[in-house]
Image (cartoon, rainbow, N blue to C red; front, side, top):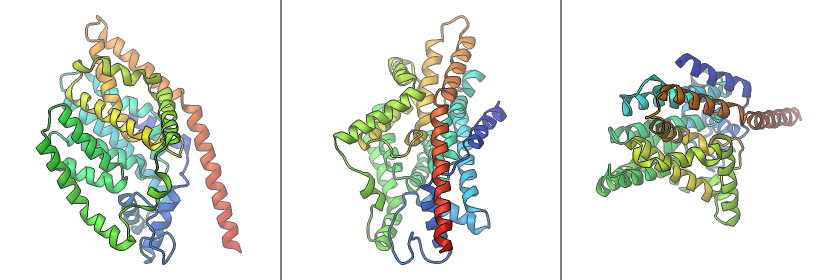
Length: 360
C-alpha cells in the first residue's frame, strides 16, 4: 500500500511537470550567493525579496555539491511530500494505536490522492518542505515540545506562517486543556529566542525585519475579505465536499480524539487567517497544502466514529474513503491541469525572453 500511495503521488507530480515562475526568484538569490555576491537578487542591492530562507540555504548547499538546481528543487519538494505521508502514517499509529489497517492508511491515502500536494511538491517552491515541518511539529507538540520548537523554528525560516503555526498550536493546546498558559507562554518565548539570531541578521544585512514581499502583498480591506472567502470556498468545493468535510467533524467534536480536536482547531484558525489575508495570488490552493493533513485527521476520525456501530463498518469506511479519495483526485484535476499548463507556458516565455535578452 505504501508503494501504491507514493506511486500515486509521483504519477501526479510527473503529469503536472511544472516549475513555478516564482521559484526563479529563489534560484537567482542562490546563484548570486554561490557566486560570492551575497544573498541578493541584484548584485550590490541588499533587498530581502524572498520569504524562504531555509529553503534557499538548503538548495544552495545541494547545488554546491554539484546537483542541478532546478531539478533538485523539484525532487526535494517531492521527497518532502513523501515524508509528509510518512509522518501522517506515524501519527496514525501513535495517536490511534487500537484501530485497524484501514484507519492507518486513511490519512496517507487522502493526502496521496490530493493533486494539490503533488502540484506544489514539484513546483520548485518551499511549500512541501513547510508542510513536512508543520506536520512533524504537530506530531511532537504534546509529547516532545523541544522537538516541536526546533521544527517550528525551521518552518518559520521556510515560510513566515511558521510563526502562525506556533501561535495556533499554543491556543489549541490551551483550549483543549493540554497545556497551561504558563507552559504556552514559555513555549512562545523560547520559540522567539530561537529566531532572534535570524532577526538580527536580517536587520543588519537588509536593514529591515520584514521582507520586501510583506509590503507588496499584505493589507486589509473588504476586497481582501471577499478574495479570501472566494479562495477558501474554491478549496472547499474541490476538496472539502462544499464545506461538509470541515463541518462534519465539528458536529462529532466530543467523539473525536484529542489529536483530531487539535488538528481541527488549528485548521479552523488557519482558514480564518487565509480569509483575512485575501487568500493567495497563485492558483491551485497553495496556502492550503500545509494544513491538508490537519484537515484529514478529524475527517477520518469523525467518519470512524460515525460508522462505529454499523454492522459492516469496515466495508462502509473503505467505501466512503474510496469515494472521497476518488472525488479529490478527479474533481479538481482539470483545474489543476489548466493551472499547470498556464505555468509551463509562462516559464517558457520567460526562458525565451531571457535568451533574446542575453543574445543582444
